[in-house]
Image (tube, rainbow, N blue to C red; front, side, top):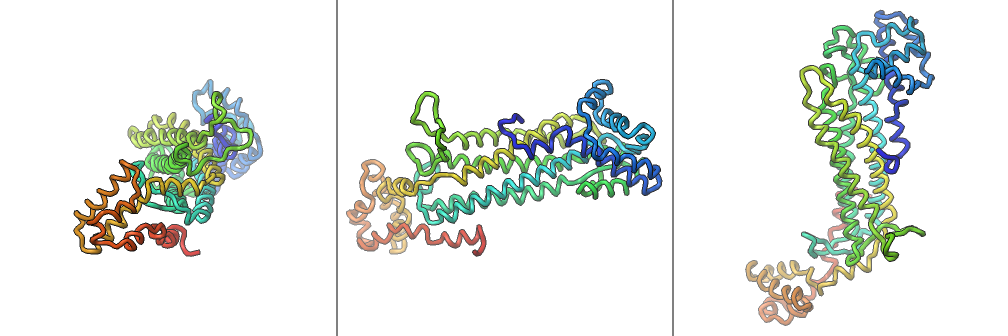
Length: 435
């Protein structure tokens, strides 16, 4: 991923230096296990660890790979140069390249997941704080983009909190799903390496042994992982899209923080554009673009092919780096979002009480009017508001059929905004628990 959308901590996980360090640790732990089993001399295993604090020469490994056309062999050759060929001759004993590649990849993904979980925690904290800040800030709810009934900005933040909390729970499961390693040798039969080696390496690397692998770890695990990132990205876009709508000039219920010196347009000095949330929409598309290739990677020929390899070299770093950046950008947007309660109330009242139509409908049915007739009476007066800008309450009071069932006081009682917010505490308890 380009530096513009990257954060150092996540980028570091995917650096060549970090990758080779993980490869080294896998090989060194495997040597320890082999030595404990008496397969290789203990002094050889101990000698491998002499490279623990050595900075692997990425350029040298690339130079060797240019000849060998094999990255793991190039790494092992360089490791032999560091610790000496005699001490290195038992490294990689009974192992195959995928033992190193797949186990290391899953280590990287679990470390990336830990960063992403912390990112989501920041988003959740911001959403929760803003939810309680605007718990009773009234705004109009919309369905199909059309005014529906009143809600609160607090409920808007709360539902986004609940959605991101579900995303976090899924990522916890996806992390567990991907946290496996395999040191099972060619074809995965353990013919040349004892299962105890796999158990030791996985324990030391923070993984669980893959119950059964071929020459590769099953890719349904990776499909689950990247699909989860795709869902989280979609939830992120869901939030961003709502904020983008709220910033539209004719709505202006909230907007991204516009910092001193910021410019909105090269041509129009008056512009204040939702650039961050638009950016989040685009980044979400990038994250989701990894999902289909990850699903297609599940199907591999026989016990192994490498059709998945090129895909994962791209989507592993690009997807996690992009989502890491995007989640932190989203957290910043939520934390600094400028909310305009007065504009929310103005929009809510734009159609002269029309948003209370269902209350009137239900009141009529409670008075014995059939639902069909109640709907007809309310809609008849509601259309006058849409088409002529009339006042809904005035029209209802002037309608003899409505007045036959409801007094003026009973009509007025159905225009109480508090009616729509009386269950907010109940919803907040469901989402956030008891204070």
